[in-house]
Length: 384
Image (cartoon, rainbow, N blue to C red; front, side, top):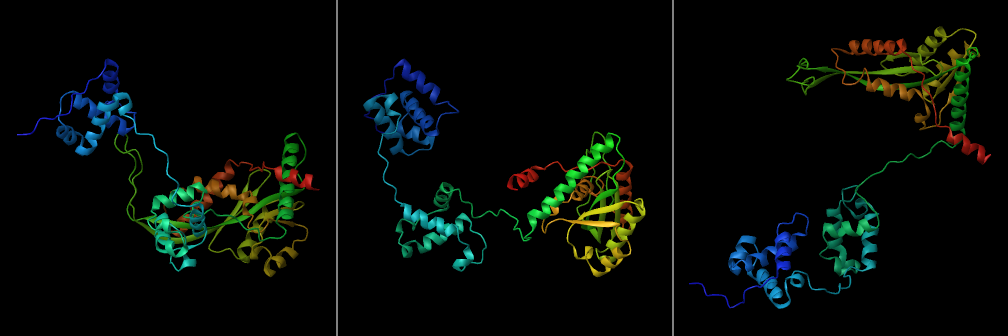
């Protein structure tokens, strides 16, 4: 038979009973405070220490700790942790600086196969070399320790952020030339709206969208069914038929697209695009091309063709790695979002036909693509 407890019963005031009654059912208070309130309430209700420990899945020692504290100094104070002075940090600033130095190096520099650190890998390396480096406090450092040290320095060595190295020494001057062309076009288009004649120099933006895949289904798509299936159902398996490249020239005055769908982007394909432009525009105008420095644009074959059409074409070259300056990229983005989105075909030939059909649909309702960010030109003016 269990021996009766010699501890006195817990006496609570009405205020303390109300406080414990609310706290033991709280959904927002800290878990430890709710648990302690439950201990005291059950003891006040007459449960034994063992019963309380089993019900709350605590040790008898923990239950007795809070009961005894409350019997000594009351419920309001007994629920609180004893104030204590924080101990001095074991991991010194020098040790943290060593961890930060390691994080700023690549794992391969220390003989590992990985390119980037994970927090776990960094922690393992730190534990392995802590004593040798003179920081024994880090011998048991865990992933969480690495996290705290790196967070304090806003370091995330497991992430990669890409940047673009300017490899063109004339990047800024070329960018200025392109932006000045766009600014001139904006003024010309506004003047035409007010009754001015069409400009003598027609500007088109030219580039290539390579690798457009011809993908076919292995099973037919299933159409949506009202009230049952809300989307098109498609088999996960697919067939690859090959790819096409789209060579496009976007008229920056009226939005008309001149395009070819080719297997490759060589001088012969680019010359064919120039011939299409030559046939499309009046013979007395100059066609100004905004394009990149692709080899086919300046090859011997291309220059030989241009020599047969003197004063017909004029180049404005974008900087190296400055394709974002070419407005035709917005046209390719529009194609990707519209008729190329989720496209499935039965052959490469069908893909080519549907691309040309999509371009024809764009030309039925052309949209003038505009460049609006001319802040860089203001910076050039201030620098000058």
